[in-house]
Length: 187
Ligand SMILES: CNC(=O)c1cccc(C)c1Nc1nc(N2CCN(c3ccccc3Cl)CC2)nc(N2CSC[C@H]2C(=O)NC)n1
Ligand code: NI
Image (cartoon, rainbow, N blue to C red; front, side, top):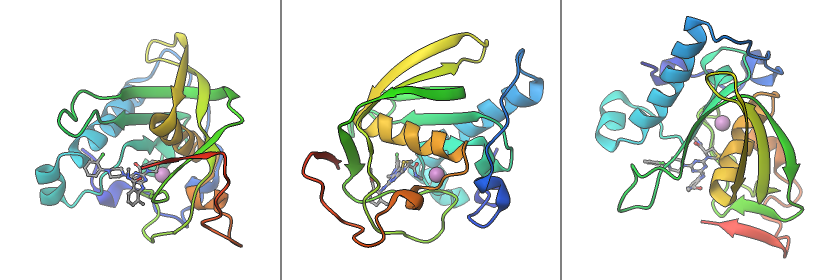
């Protein structure tokens, strides 16, 4: 079970490296990694458990954030407020590649946070509103996933981690809240 002490923080070089491809069949360690990352997200989204263990809530976690420079990320986007466990997206992405993306952009109304970045970095993080991801599943089967809006933003944030990018790399430092008219604002 991961705790916040297991999460690498900005400044650790592992967060700025391109992670290594995962090979198949998955090793026991790789399977455990996938399980533990998803388990962290589930635990972090449980207010009582998160409070008890002082976990920051997240909807995505990439292997470099637990110090493992491998192309693997977990995404857990809750369902609606009244039924959060009816997840909008629950997936382990292995060797993910964004193979197409919309010109249309989207950004979170309140900017982005990251478990590996302790400071708040205000500003819009413009991303593609819709993307198609080619990835391998736990059995090594190549899959394609089309996502849009919030799940798309989360997937892009996590895939960025696999290439050594952090969310604030995308903030317009001259005008962090620059409003591009045809960018979808997601709240
Ligand atoms: C929708 N709220 C906003 O956007 C947002 C709103 C305000 C400020 C910021 C700064 C925001 N930004 C932001 N908020 C989140 N969380 C909101 C709370 N939530 C959560 C919290 C408690 C229980 C269950 C859950 Cl689910 C967990 C996720 N997550 C991300 N990111 C950027 S993409 C990867 C993802 C991530 O997991 N970061 C750790 N950004
Ligand atoms: Ni992050």
